[in-house]
Length: 374
Image (cartoon, rainbow, N blue to C red; front, side):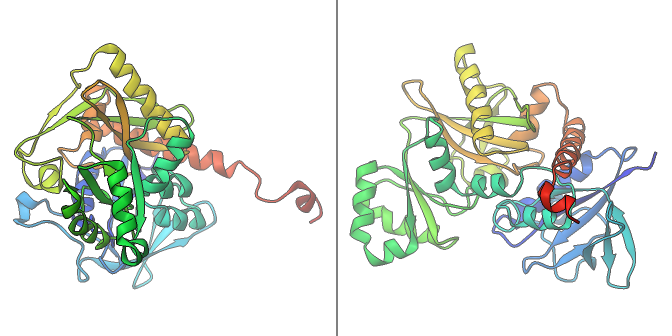
């Protein structure tokens, strides 16, 4: 039986480009060479596809954060072959089959449904949520609205458009005061804690908003939870998703679990896996993680982030449909603690991708009346 050829796609046009490269390296290292053939596809910051001779170098190997450069590898494009398979076509016309795509593209143009829509049009199986789930899962304003409508406990927040802030800053300030300070101000459609700041009082709000608006035209003002515990739970599956054991993040020498604590400072946070929670709270977190996953119509994988306040109440914070896969990332660590080691986790995600693809392709695309009239 031939090996499955897995195109691992990483880099991309978002501010999370470097983290995507690090995650992709971990995924590629975990793929069993006896079962899979890895095809590394890097996307440059301006959106060009390059087929690379190997995985990206880690910071410890190169002395710098990795990126996909314009001169790296060779240009490549995706093309249909015989209708059942797809091929990567090189600049000189060379062709190579791919069976499934593993997108490790964090943030806009990769995690927000744009890339998923491209793969749907091309008819290629891929790991993770579809177009709708990816788009809603990326946008903090919309995901909170969906969860609220589903009756799930969501941290109180307000979405703000840049035009609103420019036209009537006093009205935005009034909405912030109604939420109550301190506030966290976040880009609505970005991850990895990029662009997030804490505004402790009204005087700090303009600077926080301006920082968040650097990354998008919509931001979220979110009320800070009283003495929060940061809890994360991983979800795996399609129609019957299951939750991992929860984990807890305890930042060290950082005001919150920011970009530096996540990726640059090896001692930036303590990860407690499993989280020291009582049985009832653990069950609540796992139940809410699966409910949040289903409410957004997700597939394959997601990491669901929670706060537990000083009174013990559990609050949904946000969800990540393409969670970090670095060596220190919570998603693979949570599943390892739940009895699914990293290589098996990656293999299961690829199986789930092909399962979902087959189920979708079994549905009719043409109404029976039109099909019978052909």
